[in-house]
Image (cartoon, rainbow, N blue to C red):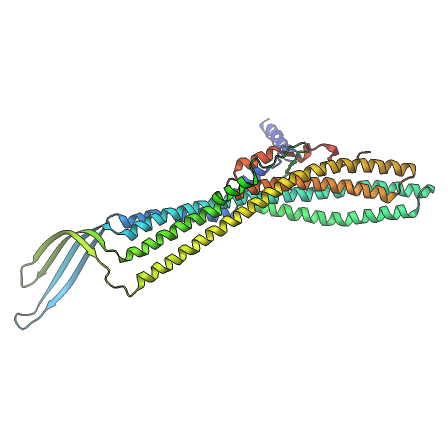
Amino acid sequence: MATGIKARKLALVVAVATLPGTLFAMDIAAAFRDALTNDAIVASARSQLEAIRERVPQARAGLLPGINGTASINRWTSDNNVSARRDYTAQNYGIQLSQPLLRLQNVETFEQSKLAVLIAEAQYEAARQDLMVRVSQAYFDVLIAQDNMETLVSQKRAISEQLAAAKRNFEVGTATITDQQEAQARFDLVLAQEVVARNDIETKRAALSLLIGKPVPSLHVVRTDATIEAPKSSQGEWTDVARNNNLGVVQAKVAGEIARREIEKQRYGHYPTVDAVASLGHNRSASALFIGVNTTAASVGLQMTVPLYTSGAIDAKVREAISARNKAESDLENARRQAEQAARSYYLGSSSGIAQVGALKAAEKSSQLALDSNLLGYQVGVRINIDVLNAQQQLFTTRRDLAKARYDVLLNGLRLKAVAGELDVKDLERVSALMQPASSRPADASTVKK
């Protein structure tokens, strides 16, 4: 009995797992979560961040006390013209403590280590946001390739029907051989394009699979009734945000502050250093001729070191740091300009893309009406076969371009958020809300009205 129940459960699991529809379709947010655990670039940035965080306690150690213990044992031989030769063993034990009181260079090193962590955190976040964009690009590339394939399949089906009609009409004498040849030529061309399209799908799916680290399941597609909104803020506001919050700009800002502190750090090479020092030592010696001598000594004091002459090394390091600071300022301005230009480009791409989507929707309706008119005209003899074929191709191409335009708008919106340093998983989830499993798409989305 138990075996039968287990067998039925296994059969149910297999049946559900092989369903081609909505249960196991992957949206963009899920694809990113899979990629986040698999991507080598993000993993590298994460490890780099963990490594740089360890610089902070290392630099802090330069401001805290240090304790060293020493021990030595030596065999001595003493021979002079006053006394007889004697051999003895000396043992020395000691503990030294040093507490920095005035080491300004160490203070700057500590502050620089904390700033280095900020750069590493920005680099890690940039890697995460870049992965969101790369996953979205790969995801949409697969959908575009699939849409192109669906367009060719639908076009092939429609041309096949038109070819059959041309053959029938030629046999009954109501059409010329030219109609049949034109339809055959279009059919053969679609077959060739279909081979290329299948290869393109496999290539795009392999690229997405490489990102997410597993085979690509069924993907969601944009709903035909989805409303894609334009960027809420103005172009100027987006460029201002990008100039200040772009992660590349943030890194350049912090790098500039590190460079500024490096100048002060090198100038402090002219300053004295002061340490509080303490030591405790014990010495024990013994010989065959004399009674052993044990000595314990302790000391506490201040130790100051003043650099008097360094052969110009400190001044050269200061000049080097100043040049590095100037470079950091130029890098910051360059990062701001690049962020501003990218924000402007993605904003315009998103805005114009929405207008293009609206125009292509109207063109789809017009193309459908034109095809209906040409089909009717062909039936009554006022249109020829090539007119119908051209109308069909125009409709299918318009639908393909409309789908691609929607994907481009969504991708430009994500890129705009990324260049502003604001892209988050919630943005991917909002895009996913505009999509649905492919099997849920209306059946007439890629077919010709009859």
